[in-house]
Image (tube, rainbow, N blue to C red):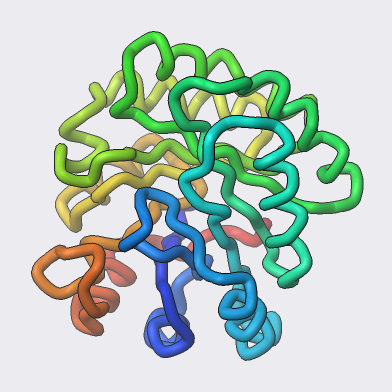
Length: 234
């Protein structure tokens, strides 16, 4: 069964999506990029307020793929008490070395979610797919497919459905949590749910005029929540 991930940037927004019974509350700052990070103090405040009522994930920012930089950012975010930490694998940089470096943190029960981008160059998308076994071996908990440039349309407009299906199948074969995101719209839900991802992630579709940096629209949250079957426990 597929659940709903809602990305928020404040305690007020977290309260709104919590009232709609979303399955994961994801903390990010949209004005700072695809995976813009909130200040760790803000993250900790929201986690404390949540008090375990819903799993919480957080991004570490649009950072260069340099092992020590990523390691330090993950370690700092882990101190906030979030349940999952999302790490974006951006073009260029030392992907394998970064994965190996982060394996030292997964051994201490820090749950990492790798984020791959469907709208990067074809070779980099393929490299991301081939990286999945290494992510599993390094102790990552899951992999999410997202888009980097939100102006280019939704994931389903950028990537062929056969490739999305292949991604979901590969991630689930390695017994990792599988998420799909990337400017997803209400009309994308039914088709993507046939692939049985664990989660569908939303930000722009929850906001006024589908502007991901605008205020969240309560009616949109409810509409999308009602279109998604509740997730199984993880």
